[in-house]
Image (cartoon, rainbow over all chains, first blue to last red; front, side):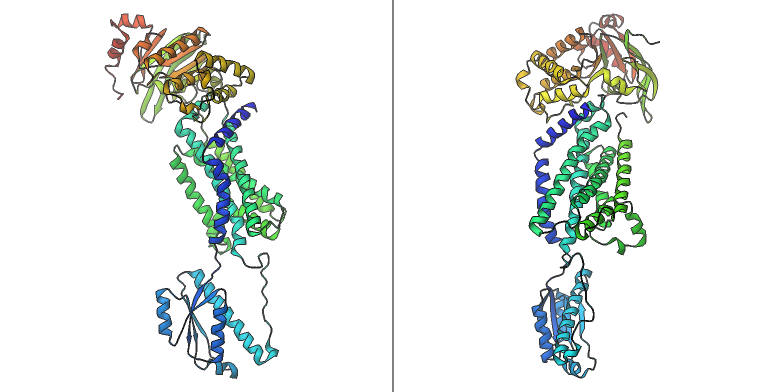
Length: 367
Length: 248
């Protein structure tokens, strides 16, 4: 016990004296929280639209005005031929083309079917599909208005959509809980791993290994420091989310911190395995990087797990961030309780045991 | 077999790395309280042998005891009774002189009040006391080595292993270093030291000479010189190391 105290004092002193680490713990979450929510957005804005107006009617003019007024759509040009608009699309100046056929207004009044057509540049699939969807919605809205002015009886929506838990459909609200995951991986996964391998590189670990100190106290002392750092980072990030984005957790903070701490245990255990298996910092970094890439791209951080192929969905069951991301999003946005998320908590607890057992088994005091 | 007069007793101790035999069936004893010089050319296997004795490395075969504990099975118990100073300086550069002493003393369970007294006394003796709050990384090499020795003996181990403690150190500091060794020895600590300086070899009670992983000779410096008909230890070393296959 007193050995742990002595070692803990050493780690705290070294952490404080490091010219970089204390600043990192404070500045890193603030920077990430200020920048990333703005840039990692899937909301598509400024879809450039070129309208091919073959009708030159009041209705076509109305549609054009509507596009111009939309906050998502930008009217690029109104041309008289599809080829001309298509040239702009090929140049990349235009994202979608709306073609209004001749006699559209006439058909609109008589009820005959003249179709509007949309051609979207879908090289970027998200922008293409969302862009044409916005355009279709805008058209639907303006047609509804015009129908209403013709015969009020037809007014009213057929379908009503409510976006629960994220009423404004802000992508940011979805991203903020996920950013906490990235922060934890870096602060409590990478840093202790690098610290431990650093002692191997410098040779100080040799002087420790020749003492009766148990490997358990030695690593625990290191981890405690980074666990605290991880909790500080989360707290700072949550404060920024509240102050800057006005976003607070719907569910209980206790549940969030419990999940975060379990995830910290998993990731720091994982970092220890990486450092035990590496003899240089470079090896440790590449080892960690490989897995962190998989964590980022396969845990539902950016793309939903449900849309992955079945085999990949099975793989995600062993990825710890999967559970934590799910806990964070549900508790933060929907107000899920500990009981609701019990499966995820259990999975994290199991992974924490597995990772730390692995770390204990791969540590060698003697070669 | 176990004789309390011998602090180290090993028989056929061997370490292989793949097909390479770094230490090849060495058998020797070290008496309690003596200064034992462990000599050999670069690559002869001294450090590997020493690491096995300190519980840092498992022997491939062979047996032995250090401070009464088995080198194969009781490595962790051995560690409680020894001090070790590695070839590479390995105190914490980002801790002060005093903090390093408190850390390593604390690890061995020396009570903090006694630790402070011992550390202060040691620093006074080393004329180091003004440097107590200096970062170890800022000290010159010779001072670092003296400090490393002080740290290795702070917990009053029965035996201290010194792996080339005076490599790269100036002659005056070397002299002081050996005074520290004699001091510790007079207080009853056994010294197990490797060196490449043959004048230092003369300071030892007994010397073993390692060539290509084997111990080729073991005796007092005077006897060695006599039996090899040499004027100095330097000559003894050259006669023995002449046939070495390894080394750089």
